[in-house]
Length: 186
Image 1 (cartoon, rainbow, N blue to C red):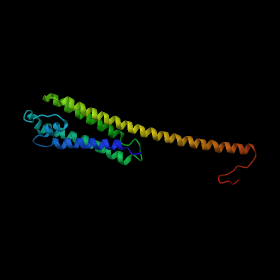
Image 2: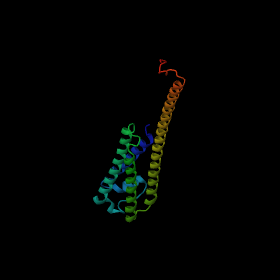
Image 3: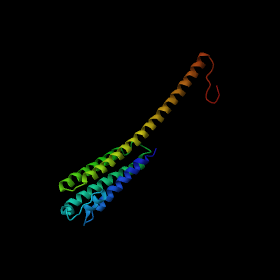
Image 4: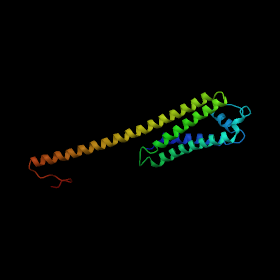
């Protein structure tokens, strides 16, 4: 079973963080523009420390790492889901943890700089990440439950067939008739 929702959400978050990293790398208004995309309006002239390479570079690299983790989860889900139903669980979990940690760092750094309105924006993004993670978990658990149900039905069917053959063999031995082989031959 293909995990369509997992694939879509991993690709979505990979694109979001890659876009934020790309916007953040802009030399003039990097972090201000990235925060503007998230929904915080601020002027870079009011916060001159946000344009330094020591602030911009680690943030852009962190966003790129999170984007790569989500991209890795997307590829892992697409390629290995047929062979292993739990493919990419660890990568998806790490990607969501890193994204939440990055948003928390942005919140703490923004609060230290005195940026107003950042808490609500980060809270909304964290809620979206949490909802995405819950949806991914629900999809994976439903697929696992369906696979387990299918395996148990197959096991039950083979058990019934085996007990039917044993019963037939027992009856033919009790009645002293030769056993009937598959295909009607004796």
